[in-house]
Length: 311
Length: 311
View 1 (cartoon, chains in turn purple, yellow):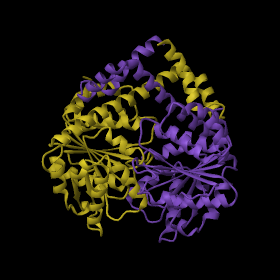
View 2 (cartoon, one colour):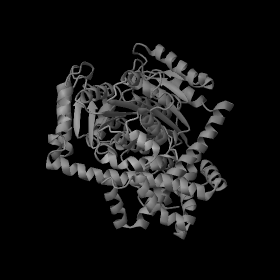
View 3 (cartoon, one colour):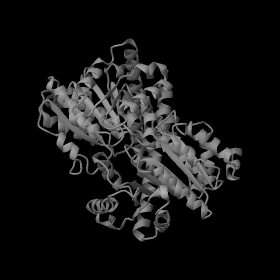
View 4 (cartoon, chains in turn red, purple):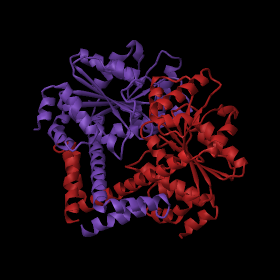
């Protein structure tokens, strides 16, 4: 085991922070570190929370983390920011507020900007590191739009979809996309008008999607006031006990493994092929694609050919 | 040139719709079709519009498409939905409203659910097909969160970031991320209070990011009323004339080509490696990852080794 991995195992928070940065920047030191800590992820519970901007995810995550910590659990929080330069910086009032010195809670935000599969790999790595550091529960917060919900699915044992009452057309469209991935739904800001209607709408949309989803828990919270947090925790802790839920989780673990294997392969293979092609050939391919003399697919096949022919 | 490519070139809308479905489903017929039509993308102008849910992107895109069509242009619209089963379906009132029979406008929505790089490839393909069909202007609408802004960057000549007055913390965080990619900003719903403040905030955040961004155009619109659309079109059509803008565009085209080459390579390489490994070996790797006996990176290296050793 590397020295850094040992420091993480012994509970050194600065070592953990440094290791996450290594994973985030795709350092050459990362693979050995992750290999050391990977086994510990088997025992960590990873809960993903996703939802549109403005539904109050950060506050909800903050409340959950504190309540779990009060129960004696060590909780890691990973917030995935759809932004790069300011991540965790001055503009993110939420993050700063959350980042208090409670030793049972470790909060970190990951920037989503990056190359192919980079975010997902960083997220997987950060979860492994937190698990290795003894955070038995990891909460992952992400914006539920675009590819994000797929990303969170690749890592969470349980996905919570956070909504709020009275949303517009765009958000309704998002809802349709995230309905499928929710193991549990929360209607936050439930003190706003229309929260019961929203609960009924979710229930009816779930029913349309799949009859077996009729039992999916839907809870109401007012995170800013701490209302509904205990009921949510009860629902979270009760999840995964029925045979259907267990079966769903086992199938999901395999799907996650398949996706993560593909991601790791893609990144390794592209680097390998790029190095094999050499800089001149790579730049020439780019020039030809940019000038529309060839298309990316054809250029890729030409670069791939020398490797696969010999295989 | 394939028969389908010829039908698309001759302006057959049903052929175009069918071709986009082929690209979306990653049909084996797609590569030849795209190779035929790729050269035509050099002359098409691709404008990306991105922003958080609820800012009114769809309405704005709708207005822009109509106005350009009134000027005699043929306009393709690609809406990227962060949802799968309902895409373009009953829940998306917006889409249906937009999908009128104006022969100068062609609207299509692409589902974002899918495997590695699939969306991006489908988007690139759909743009090429629309360009090949003679739509000289293609508007791409996407939700500006998570990876989506990166996706749109890979394809647009010009990216418009759509915001609205009076947004919450979460959206502010999003803003930070999308500031960098905006060639032009629109504050929509400008009849709401605080629109001038939002303009000033964007201006000041851009200034903090990079002094050269001080000149980036920011326009105000009320898309539902058609207010500000002409000024926006003027700003769009005036973009890319200054030496700085031209230089930025040339650099971006190369970046886009690099990214798309990597995406195409990743997808091809993973398929190749998976096929080479055989189903038993693949399933075994997945079982071991799911049981946390190995990590994705290590499993990927083991699968890659036989191929790269021989190369």
